Each structure stands twice: as structure tokens, then as C-alpha cells.
Image (tube, rainbow, N blue to C red; front, side, top):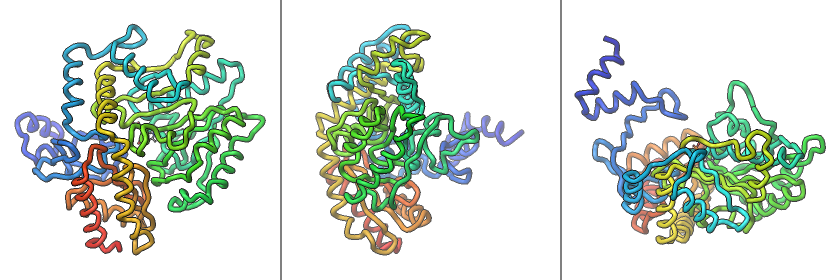
Length: 441
Ligand SMILES: Cc1ncc(COP(=O)(O)O)c(C=O)c1O
């Protein structure tokens, strides 16, 4: 009997911890993971609030899941999901509609600037970015001024899918068939640790201005993240989004904001662009929308963009979407999550606790292996001297019951936004222990 068929047979009867792990190692393809990663060593099976438990009963504070803004097993979200499941789970929106999708679309419109009122739902952040690119390109065709060139950050990350990969130059994004989209890439003018300094604003905007200019190939849109997530946890100087908005207006380009990670209170505002009081033309928001309880992404566009789709030559409408777009259960999860974000003042809490972490740890910046300490809202970042040091920190933290996230040479501490002051104290305590015991400072 082959290993695999033996495994199938055994797994039917044997659910010991070792067997659960072995089954995982044989059958699961883990995304974005080197082949020698043993994810089954961290086999999680339960969560409550900001804590999760592994199959051996060890508990951790979750500061690594970008999606889980409202914590685990939250009745305020899971009960409405269950009720909706009992009633009606969804239908292909190209055929009919459901009540929750309308309620959620209206709710988003009420949270966003007036012009951003029309939402298309997809399942993942990557799909949202693909949809935004399609909508932007279609818009230009529909107003009979075709434009196909995008401007994006070389170090941006917009997802796993073909188009989303085409607009980044991060080495891990490279695909065998190259870029599918004509994109001009903007390089960061300085090291990640310096990028939030006010004196870098002018050179950063200058790079975008240059990238936008090209009379033969005018830009259809700029797409950026307000904070580079995967591409080095990079924070930008105040005024970046406002300056970019102005440049886009001057070049006649649309501004697409990829707020897949930053939306829904993570940065201390419901949407990160609110820090600069601007309005993007298309907004992609995802991870915190349903708190990770259901997969859902919103692609919200200005009504004046949506209105041009009556000129689409094939169906006279938006030729885009999935049979699961606007899934009723996912919409109910999002409505419950948004309600909780507002009721529990999660924007204010993210701002308060984020500032607390920064003020506690910024003294370590520049000491030993700590290159920089930065953050916005409840995205707390420690930049270290090397990838290896980050990995060492991550595993030490895990041993001590804290799950953090590594992006290159940065450690990201991203707790659920429902974390309380006791949780923040515990997180701080473990980080301090790791810095001391790991010999990082
Ligand atoms: C800014 C940004 N855009 C897009 C994506 C892709 O989202 P998904 O993994 O849901 O496809 C991510 C994921 O981390 C992200 O951080």
C-alpha cells in the first residue's frame, strides 16, 4: 500500500494529534510556503476573542491573522451567519438578488464619500484588484479614450492572480509568463525605515509624476496600497495620498486604492484614505470586511464610472463577477462585523492601542538588531537587521504564546481590533521578553 492510500485508510479511524499532523503534511498544499515549512506544528483548532489554541492545548495571542479583526467565535457575528444559513445562503447575482447584498451595499455607501456608491462583491483581495483593473480599463474604452497603462509601486503587493501579479515587481511575485499588463513601476526613493519622513514626500511624488507622464501611453490609473503590507511594511509620509490624488487629477488618471488590508478600522479610521480626506475613484477593501468569518471583498466605484457600463459593447453592463459574488451569508457576516466595529469603537481603540505600542517600543529603534519601530493604528512593525533575525524573533514569540507575522525583514504585530488593555499589556510583555532573551537589543 502506498503511503498516501495507507494514510487515507488510517485517517478514517485515527484522529490522534500525530495523525492529524501527518495527514496535513501529506495532503495539504499550503499557499506561499517553502516546501520544508511544517505548518502542522501549529495546528490550531479553537479560538475565542484574541486567543487561539493548538491541538496540544497551548494558547496564543493572535497577532498574525490580518483578517481576524473582530476575534474568534464572536457570537455577534457567528449567530447572524447561522441564522442566514438556515434561511437562504445565496444566489448568482447575475440571475437574481438577495436582501443582505443590498443592505451591505447601502451600508458601505453610507460609510464612504458620496460619489463612491456602487459596489461589486468578489471573494478575495486578489479578485478585487483584478476587478478594479478591469473596471478602470473598461471605463476608458467606454468613454472612447482607450488607455491601458497602470502605475504601481514596484514593491506593492496586490495578490496571487495573474493581473494582480503583473502590477508588482516583488521577486516572489514573478510569474513564468511575465507581466500581462502594461505597468510603470515606481521604486521607493529611500529605505523602508525612512519612507514615512516628511522630507521624502516631494521625491516620492516626483517619482509618480514622472511615471504618469507619457504622451503616447497615457495612464489609465494609479493603484497603490496606503501602507505597503507584504512589500516591507512601509509607511508613507503624511500628504502622500493627497498628493497622489492631485497628480492623478492632473494626468487624468483614475486612482485605485488597494485597501484590502488597511480598511475597516485597522489604521484607526474606517478607511485609510480618511487620514488624508481624499476620495479614490475605485476602492478595493477586503480582509476586515467580514472579520475573516466569510470570504468577501468589496470593489466600490464612483457612480459616474459605473454609469459608463451601459456603453459596454457586449452586454451593456459590467461583464465581471463570480457565481458567489454578493453571497448572502458573507454579506450578513460583513453587516454584523461593521456593526461591531462601530458599536465597540474599534477605530478609536486601534488608534489608542497602536500609539501605546509605538511609545513603548520606539526607544529600541536603532539599538542592536532593531532597525526601526513604526506603525499606524493597530499595525505595529519592528524592522530588524536581517531576515534570519526576524525568523528567530517570530519563533521565540511563538514559544512564548504570541503569534506574529513576518514580511521580509519586518515583524508585524497585528492583533484583532477587539483586543483589550490586558491583551495589549501581555503582547508588550512578550515582545520585551523576546527582545531581551533573544539578544536583539
Ligand atoms: C494590499 C493587499 N492586496 C491584495 C491582497 C490579496 O488578497 P487575497 O490574499 O485575499 O487574495 C493582499 C493580501 O495580503 C494585500 O495585503
